[in-house]
Image (cartoon, rainbow, N blue to C red; front, top):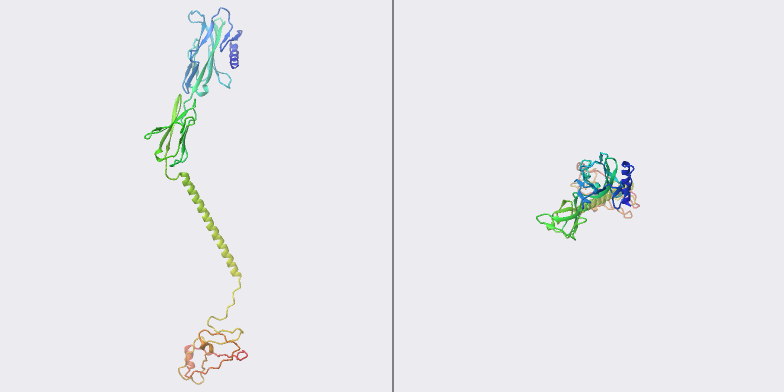
Length: 404
């Protein structure tokens, strides 16, 4: 079905330039144009074994083709009107005309030309600067007329061209943490290759080593290294290759004995988090303590201060019922050294000053104390004044508890 469609497209093009001739499709890929009887039959030729060509991208190629007439008797250079067309057919795309030579006019696409100058029976096609997109089926169609414009025949042939691409430089990666006892994977991948690249890993000198399956996946380009040791450190080279070329990359493996970078990073992050939590707890504790202290100060400010005695320690003491029990002078009275002068006041010590250093409150039920006689040989008042004594009156209590 595809062959018939292609043939009809070619015929429609030829009918545009050769009106009045009937094109009859034949078996296979040949197309014949019905010509007058007794005419030689046109045949288009390609070298045997060259119907499928493979070329490396960037190179150039010649698609060989020439025509002749079966049963023709050579009579020098023929005078012919030649029409040549080359088409590119690709799967899923429309038929693409890459070259046309019609009535002495040549039109081509970039990088496409005829090998020989026209008119010539050698209609070989040259393609330069090939790319992968130039791969496909190239069909050559030839139609010949004599000098009188009578059609001498039509024929076509197809050649397959496959443009191969060497592997592009691959990229190498190390997957995992290279520490003693762990497993890592070395990956290698070429971004572009036709056909698909195969991969080979090896270790560079001085410890040369070539790896094979099962540790090597030649299709995916991965190398698995298990239970690492320090002796496995070195430079590992990956080679990507296909039938038209190769490329390589390398990766350095350094097996360490200490914790990996991930472990160290985790420890640092954990330490920082711990310090942050600790600082937050300390700050919270300080704020709470300050709040409690402020609350206690507020309570103290609102409390009523206790009542205090209107006199200082060591002063006279009043009994529970509010009566004065005794009065103690600020200074101890010294015994008199001589007889008192007439009219001089003689200080009389209280009972509390004679009892001891700590005066006690006397109960009101007890009998009033006896007056103490002045000590013979008392000190004169002038002497007491010079000593700083203060004359006082000692009150006494009645039995009813009132002062007298």
